[in-house]
Amino acid sequence: MKNIFKSLKNYAKLAFIVPVLLTGILISSCNEDIIEVDPFTSISENTAFSTPSLIDLSVTGMYQAASIGQYTGTGRGYIWGAAFVQQGDNRGEDALNLEAFYRITYQATYDGGTANNVYYWVDTYRLINRANIVIDGVTKAVAAGIISAEKGNDYIGEALYFRAISHMELLFHFSKPYKFTAGATHPGVPYRDVPNTTLENLEAGALLGRGTVKDGYDKVIADLTEAETKLLSKNSRTGNGKITRATKEAAIAMKTRAYLHMGDWDKVITEGNKLNGLYSLTSSPNGPFLNSYNNSESIFSIEQSATNNPGVNAALASQYKTRLLVCISPIIWNDSEWLSDDKRRFESQTGTTTGSVSSDAMVFSNGNKKFTNKYKDGTTYTDAAPVIRYAEVLLNMAEAYARKPAPDLANALTNLNLVRNRALATPATQAHTASTLSTQTLMVQAIIKERRIEFLMEGRRWPDIHRLQHETIGGISGIPAKAPSGHPVPTAYNIGTPYAGPFQAALPYSDFRFIWPIPILETNVNPTLAAQQNPGY
Image (cartoon, rainbow, N blue to C red; front, side, top):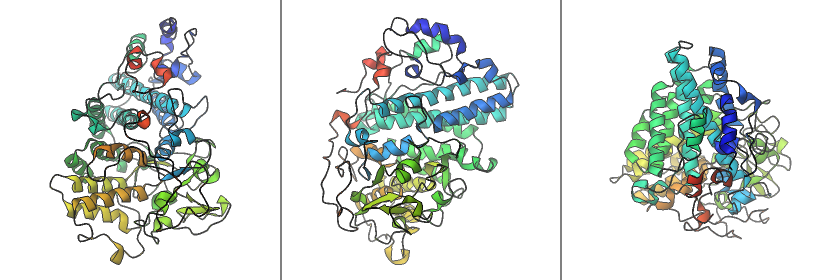
């Protein structure tokens, strides 16, 4: 450790887009004085922001960091290209891990050195640092007259957007929920808003502490609000960029997610209403996945292409379709509240080979197991990673209306049915009504169940488990019991008959494994965070 800052001094001159938090650039053993710097990051900062084309390339690099990330030297989709879906699914009970690939996450046997958790932290902060460098570099370029203020504001808005949503994602996994303490005064995550481009900034970063969860969410909201004012609207973008580039609308949508976790129901509704008339649900629940780059519902997704994707070891269609590593759990498949003729169960073809699955199917069978067909391209992995859809905004608003101190059940029902009815075989007779959901409790429970069905295998289950720990209505205590990791018994799938076991035991909320440890790579170089490690690790 004595040579760390000597190494920082040696490399401070090469600081452009050091795309990492301290853990990502330091080999942290005590006898090592080498900083690993990717050749791309060795471009000088002045050069990187010296022309409009190089500035655009720097912003593109930020999206690349969001899509691919690094995992022991290879791209694995950290954080927004695939990992948020896979980790969010495997922490919950509605996905079933079949092989060893996600077993540690699924069984909660991680520690401070577990690679999946380490790289979730490291690569997220790499992205955050890229965002900070873009903000700093673009600000200087605008002042120098290299690009216009309008163009610069859009670039800065994109970086603010990534900085905000990435810190929020870390809060879901490494900190207790917002309502864990009065005023959310418990430990959050370090909120990094300064680029690691100078020795002074690197030294300060090496000592930065966690702050509180309230402080973290306040900064998330501040960044998203500023992003909203700077970003272009989706209608000002062209082609895939309407969905795959951050927009004013994407910042608004993410605020509904943040405020839902904070329990600020009125603000969820206020932000959601800003999107009225700007998006609409596709006619079929399969619509956002049939064409993930051009549909009326996707608000923000991460672009993947045949030549640029997280690859066989991470791409969503690889893990969930071709390699068959994770299937739909019989716990949710058998749930009687998920109607047997719901279109989200639609399986146009079945078989033992994934190549026989038609794109109009939302699920497919392999043996006795059910798999998602949301990610359809199992060959070249071109499906976009769905970060947020308008269906989520509607259900966020529905829950906010229902949870208000004076519940607005009529508006809650309207928003819930907008999402649910498009999946029903006969909405006229199957839709929820004011009489069937006549109380606040019934309404909230129906909305939560709808979220489990609608966002199945999209990574949203863990954030919901996380935020529901302190809710008196529809609350959850700990991580629910799961079907055991591995292949389920032949009779496990039986629609309408609740899954009866066997089970992997529930994890109590009091268990230290409910949240992930700060990685040892981080605590070895940051004494402040070493003293603020999550209890039990």
